[in-house]
Length: 245
Image (cartoon, helix red, strand yellow):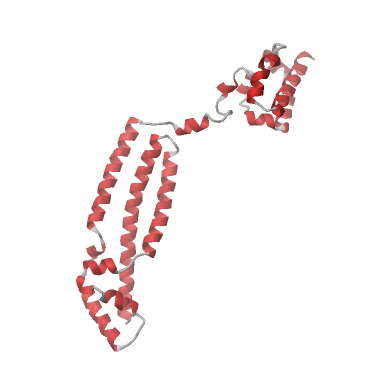
């Protein structure tokens, strides 16, 4: 019985190695496809492709190992049909009949080739798919093909990333200082900007027409809520105080 348990453990270990190889091969294919698709949309293609590949590998390997059975091995080795699973089910039972079954299975296992654990046709198909995907990735990368720049598209949705939207509404001193719209809602940030203004640095921006707010009130109404408009007016008031006092 001890010999049969050792042989059964060896069978399971070999099955796990084969499953690991197959899942790794399919993970490579998933990585290449993910990389190519994400690169076509210029969206963090390398990092996201690795994450997708790792998640696929972990989930599928766990599923495959949990669901593995001896049926496929019996199908490829007819002399083990029904006997291998029956002997495995009764591996902890000690009697004459089970012992004879174990001996019979052990004798048949000597003729089992390691290649019988592999589905050669499936391996061939996956390898061909990996080769094709690798060629497609090289083609996309070498020609720098991009269907749509998703990263740039998402960045343009933010006021802070697209300062062209602020042109004419906020003075150049704010835009050049890399101040975002969100900063205008922060009391501490507004006070810090006002207190750190140097008169000699701001003189070039102090010749603001008196009617600047009258001309831009409608644009502020459309773009900014009332609270943020008050903060901006406060900022300009501090600038004028430093400039004319």
